[in-house]
Structures are given as C-alpha cells and as structure tokens.
Image 1 (cartoon, rainbow, N blue to C red):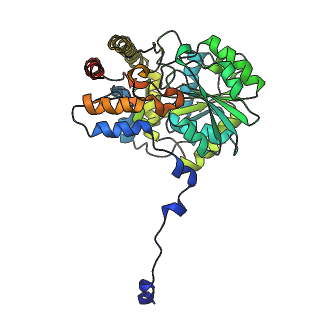
Image 2: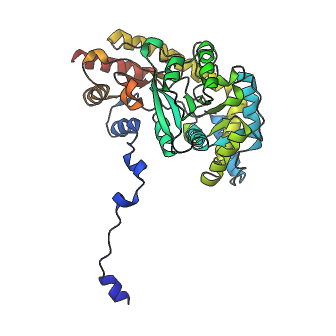
Image 3: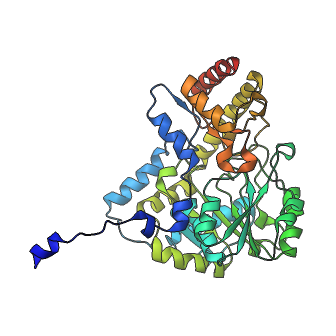
Length: 399
C-alpha cells in the first residue's frame, strides 16, 4: 500500500489558492524596507526607525531580572496585573484628570500595536468605515482592512501644521462611518492638536455618532505645553478609547507593553479578542512596566529634554541646508519637504541612502498626503545628527 502511494503524483501546495486574498494584496511596511537596507550598509546613519536610542533604565531592567529570579513566569490575568492597571489609573488621573476603573476599563496589551488592532476589530463590522487622518503610522489602514473595515483617508496639510480640520472630517463622513482615529502627537509629522482644535472636532464626532480611537503613545513627548487628550473634553470620555504605552516615553520598545482604556463594554469586547489571541502581555514585561510607571519619571523627563535639544538643533539644520521643515511639537520626528528638489520622496530617500549613506523614510509610505516629504527620526545621538546633516547638505549640492 505504501509503495503505491509513493508512486502517485501529489499536487503541490499553492499560495495562489490557499493564502488570504486581503493579506496577499497588502504591501509590506515601507519603513522596514529602508531599515533592512541600512542594516546591511556599513557606515550608514539611520534616521529611519522610530525607536529611542536610550537603553531602558537599569532599575526597570533590574525589576524584570528579579521577577525572573523569583520564578514569576506564569500567566497574569487576561487584563493584566492588577497593580499595573492601578498604576495606569493613577498616572492618567494625575496627567489628564480622568478617572477610570482598573478592573473594568483598563486592558494591558502587547504593545500599543495590539491595542490598535483590538480597537478596530472590536468596533468595525464588515464594510464599516474608519476615518484616518494622513500622513499617519503605516499600520492603521492595514489593521482596519484586516478587521473587515474600510479606511477613509483624510489629508492634513503643511499649511495647517498637519492638524486635522473638522470640515475635512465632515466631508469624509458617510452613513457607514463608525470610528475617527486620532494620533497626536503624530507619527510621522510631529504635529499636535491643541484643545481648541479638538473642541472644533467634538461637534462633528457627536453629530455623526463616531467613536474616537485616540493613539497617544507619544503623549509624554510634547514640547510646547502639556498634551491634551480628546477624552478630556466635556462629554467625550465615554466616546473615546485611549491607547497608550511605555515604548516611546520610557525607552521600552522591545518590552511590548501597551494599554487601552475606555468604556467598560468596549474594553470588554477588546479583552475577548485578546483572550483568544494573546492571553496576556508578557509577565516579566508587566513587572518592568510597573517599575517604570512608579519610579521612572526622572529618566523619562531626562530623555524628553534630550529629544527637545536634538529637535531644535536638527530642525534648524534642515532649514539651513535647504530642506524646509515646520517645527514639530511632539514625538521625535521631523518632516521636511523635498518638493522643490525635483524628486519624489522615494527617489530622494533611495538616492540619499545610496550616495551618502543616510537612511530616512519617504513620506509616501504614510499616505498620499505624505508625498513630497521625508520622515527623519531624531532619536539618535547629536553627533550622528550633525554628521547626517553634513551628508545631506553634500547630497543636495549635487542635485
């Protein structure tokens, strides 16, 4: 019997017929393309990946080590450690003046990336629309599509410092619109929304019965006054799910700790998905996050001060060499224009990398309204930023 079976012609497995059509049609991350290129190039300076160059503070790492040595290697509650959820509530009460219940309204996620995915999957039915301001982080539209929804892009403009205008949101709303995404301070532009800007949006949100998904992972990296959350506006807390984490503010990208907070029913729906896909965020990373939240403010403020110094120096340098750049007021990105240099943003980025070994990300990967710009991360040393500016000036002189 085995002899006969071995002689049969077994059809080959085919990706064409077995892979999900939506996933097949989805392009890979444009950010990672340039990251992969620079990783293979000796002497290159990377201004591409949005990751702090600081190492997680020692006392945070030590808390994780002690947790491991103590044998604390088991699952936590699906929602996350109660102590960590309590600490998040305390922090949000202090920073935003908002009260949340740790048992019903907080979910610890595996990074803010998971929280974004959960928020869309928990709120969008097939064909429902989410309004997404662009330029924006590359994962938003794919997450919406993977949830069965439709991403409706709303352009923001340099003339308004990439702030979202209520009239543009109104124009994008249809009878299928369910969600408005806000992501401020913004990746890739460094833009912020003031309280007045958000108040102008609130009428549109209420009029069209929208839920606001507010990704505030860069909230603590604000340089022109304190961050304002949409949930702080009168009557908007129950209409907003806040997504945040420690990756950017506390140099904890690889720890993969984020959180969601909002209406108990919404957080409960997100928790259901989390239960079946992730179970819980890594236990040791939650212990480290608790240490960072309770005792990490001094290091966080030091890092923010250093980013601010780099921001001012780097943006001034970009304008000096001929790359027009508005002043970013949050995150750790500059978004200079290359429209006057006769190259698309992708052509500019590819030539800059090949000719001067400086890696930046073309604005086009962040949406159509990002074309003509570059995303440059200043989360690297001042010495490297100065060298990058020198190389960019040489490159421009040859155009």
